[in-house]
Amino acid sequence: MTMLMRTDPFRELDRLAQQVFGGTSPGTWSQPNPMPMDAYRVGDQFMVQFDLPGVSPEAIELDVDQNVLTVKAERRPREGGEHVEMQVAERPLGVFSRQLFLGDTLDSERIEAQYDSGVLTLRIPVAERAKPRKIAIGTSDTEKKQINA
Image (cartoon, rainbow, N blue to C red; front, side, top):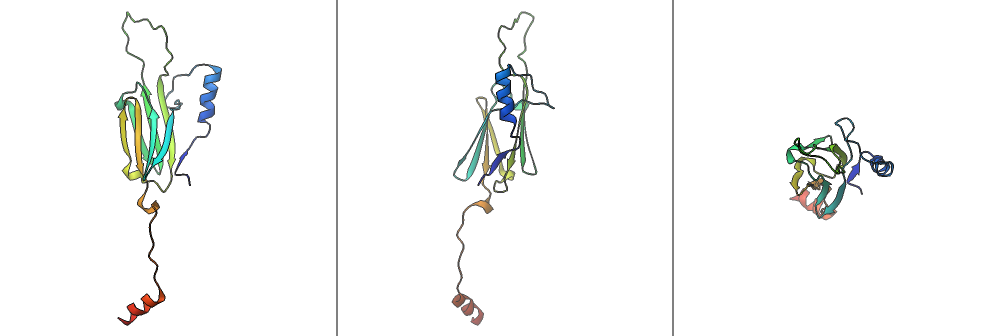
């Protein structure tokens, strides 16, 4: 059972097209660039990691709206002075965004986020209602005893 789904299946195709046909354009708030991500489950938590090197923690936005998690970040150009002459500029700038659909089995109320060394890590707990549990089985003898008591 899938607990986490990407909402835009064409992002990977866009990323590959950018690599093949050259360069990446700066992302904007209306047309953001995708960001690389890994997602995996560890016990009762779902882990999602986004690569955001060079992005200030203040430039990252996390929102959850009706089980859709949106991550947006912005990498701005390096502040240069009048004596700075750029030699190579390959690191993509601009806005990056990713949307994920959180299935009903995840607890979107208890998401924890941590940003360290350019990696944003989200911990999303599995909802209590989705965890395996034992169900007590009653017998007709038990019901009769309770009625007579």
